[in-house]
Amino acid sequence: MDEHEVLVIGSASVDVKVKVAENPLWAQSNPAPIRWGWGGVARNLAENLARLGVDVHLITALGDDLSGRQLLAHLHSVGIETNASLLIEDGKTAAYVALYQSENDLWIAFDDMACIERITAGHLYRHRRLFKETEMICLDANLTPDALRTLFRLARRYDIPVCADPTSSLLAPRLRPYLDQLALLTPNRREAEAILGYALPDDEEALREGARQLTRMGVGLAVITLGAKGLIYATPSESGHLPTFTHEVVDLTGAGDALTAATAYGLLEELPPSEAVRLGLAAAAQTIQSRETVCPELSLESLYEWLIV
Image (cartoon, rainbow, N blue to C red; front, side, top):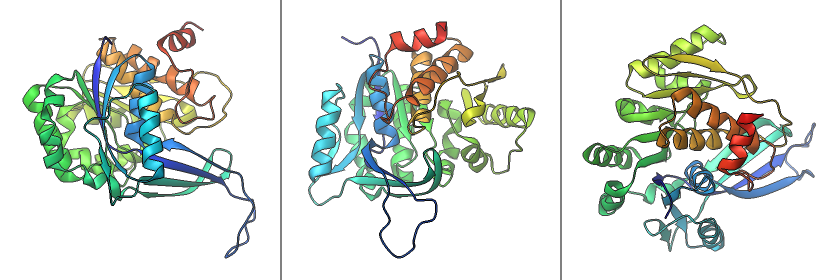
């Protein structure tokens, strides 16, 4: 039996990445490298945690279409339990399309996450046994306000810590009413600004103060990710800046989700916050060296090798 049990709730999708030509011709077809894979923040969190040896139960919603059935099979292949997930007969599996101007320079992205709205408050309440039995809940902000309200009520009832990925600056404010229930929050700078309600200058002390303000609003461990500049973290008693590990960048997709998952794992292991965050940085570093959204070679052993080096 696995040592830890985590309930993950939120999106699972088909992800499509397009590298746009330098001077595209508008209103006609342009040749471009196109790659696809499985995504969705919650799904990415779930797979990363499963690869770290956690017993994961994922609640998501998929269409009963070819993509949905293939995605479900993939989840099962990596050991993720999906009994409480929805396979919707008249639904369409969520999709995310990202256009890049260069290999890792995101230009614009689009998502169709309407399927996730089928995870209703009632559906979560019917599966409240999973809340009672888990050690931790991880979520993304694609959930509807009603679903989030029920999720946090159940987490409070059973005294379960919650870790949240804000997902985007548009969705991040949905988490604002629940900051005092979050053991971990991992926004990027724009998402942190959306939650705080003010701009954060590109200055280390200003960013530290932003992270500290999140803890004053109730967050146990606030991590503001800064891409190549590393991250700022804060708890009610400490704060710091940690740089990224030196590495070759193959694909940035999924790095933030790997960081969230591994940091959450560190909290499960009762590591000091700075060490939990370093574990997250190691997971992000390994992920960006892979073309897959979740690195297939990710494991606890590989993360500790990064930390030793």
